[in-house]
Amino acid sequence: MPDESFDRVRSEAFAGRMVEALNGAAITLMASIGHQVGLFDVMAERPAATSHQLAEAAGLDERYVREWLGAVATGRVVDFDPTAQTYTLPPEHAAWLTRAAGVDNLAFQARYIPMLAQVEAPIIECFRHGGGVSYAAYPQFQQLMAEDSGNVHDAALLDVILPLAPGLPERLRAGIDVADIGCGRGHAINLMAGAFPDSRFVGYDFSAEGIAAAQDEAQRLDLPNARFEARDVSDLNLHERFDLVTAFDAIHDQAQPARVLAGIARALRPDGVFLMVDCGASSNLDENMDFPLAPLMYAVSCMHCMTVSLALDGTGLGAMWGEQQARAMLADAGFARIAVEQVEGDRYNKYYVAGKG
Image (cartoon, rainbow, N blue to C red; front, side):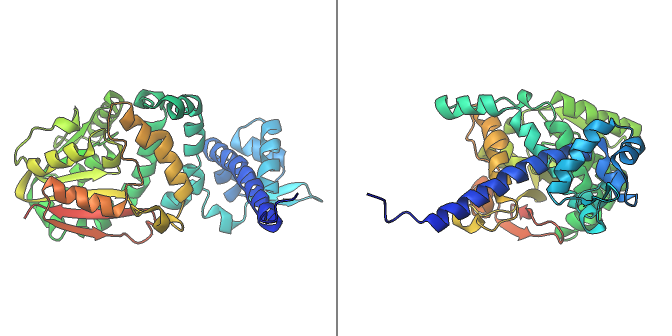
């Protein structure tokens, strides 16, 4: 006897949704490739062109370019003229797909998908047996995060983000002590060190690769007021050493985030400022149903942020810890003043400005 509760219309609609998701996944992979080999940038600078013309302009193999064009044309990413056999990237699409788009470049964001796919097998084992996947399993992560955060910092760190803390740019110009927690390749520290030569900056990260890249950039830019140290930030053990501590999308990755936040509070002087940037989601799933890129953020959390913490016997906080939990953890760490700000054009992050008194 047929199940009368089965809603065939709903079932067919869901099948259509999954077909869209599968095609979207394929387009995402092609977008990642298009970004890395420069095809979107080449197409944005040219009128309609054949696959041979685009391959020559980009210095690529035509057969691969032609098949890539098939994917992005049927995916309605580029326009195709069947009579002339030419392809065009509309300017309305280029605004979201080229390096000129800066922080709006979604083709760059697509690169996270193939990175996560590389660890699918060990993640499946974690589903079955628990534990986590080591940070070392993500060889591209440092480079991806450096490019991602670099776009944001180049565009907004000095003129938009730092002024969120009242009087902070003036203090930096006068000369204060600054630390960046989870500095990665150190671009934020080096930007600030160049802009505020009378302040003293240090970046902490447990990645030797990141620290080496940060030091190389500081040396190339001749920044004697910037230094970097490979260090476990869960054990800072510093007392009232800094006037400003920053953490850019770093706290949720920590094995022991509560311990890191408490260490930051102790390391700040009484009038110090903690500037933390992290995912702008809610701690409640139902409030994230319309959050931009929520499925992607949960997937990145599951397959990177959460699992690298669990690999170190950590708490597995995850990227989607949300504002409510962030506020509570900051208060528990000793921050009495917590303001949450947003930056125009940044739909994904919230900016926490915290102080102890």
